[in-house]
Image 1 (tube, helix red, strand yellow):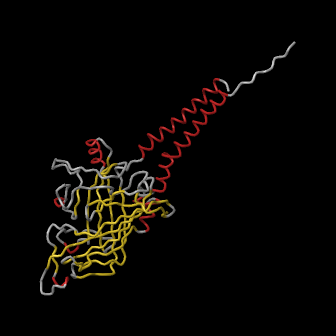
Image 2 (tube, one colour):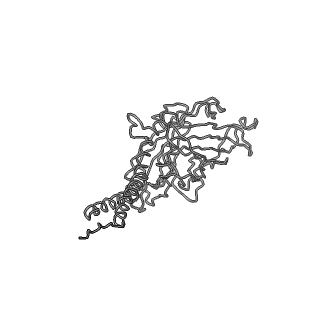
Length: 363
């Protein structure tokens, strides 16, 4: 191998090793961040549920429940908080409306309380853009609305902001809307909105959803009493106290949450909750408030795997997103490194190979 050829091969070898390092330590970290402008919609279905009808003051079985979740990124707030904390974060406003009407819409008149949904919760969360872990952010300026909160009504004045001394909301904790990029087969902490606490969520195995490999995680939220801002009163007849017009009951709650996670992106492809809420009296469950097995519908799962259509064309599509990220984070660095090392090894082989000399002829 001549000097010019050797120099060219060395240059190519160094180039491919550089590509490997660039892909692994720059391109992949740059791409493996949650998009701050993300918008997502999911629809969950809970057939044959049991709820407590406030109108009828009785349990109502055989109800089909629907839960619509909207997630919308706040780019300006994410940029502001990222600069303040000197770390990359994303900010998402979420809203979940649960009702027995699939296409429920809020009434124009807020005083029409009889037309409010069965359940509503609104949250603002601040997340680490790489890991998905919640980040505490509660600005001191009262005029600054970028902080995290939880609310169960549309009234901005009713929003609960983080307070370490509060039994209602101390601040978000653990994972909330996604898992880390490169999700591992281990136990994480995941947020439960109803109790406003994070609990362990354990890896249970691997499977496929519509052909997409996913990790299955399960979380047990233990049965517990829910804090109440004011006493919850029901007619005494509901709990066997026939001679009393009303009695104070305690609302209890428990849940088994199952999540199907695409491990490269950490995206939640499917979610399921097995919820049970009751009204307890004197420490004994008396009335079922909610009993439902609710999960993403097939269209939502399909959208998360293959991608949305029409107005939701930018949503989901984690099958292709995972493949692209895996290519940049694994295959490009690996193949480039192998090619680069082989080229350098080839130069070394020819350089160190013993040279043969031509025999001279005697005259």
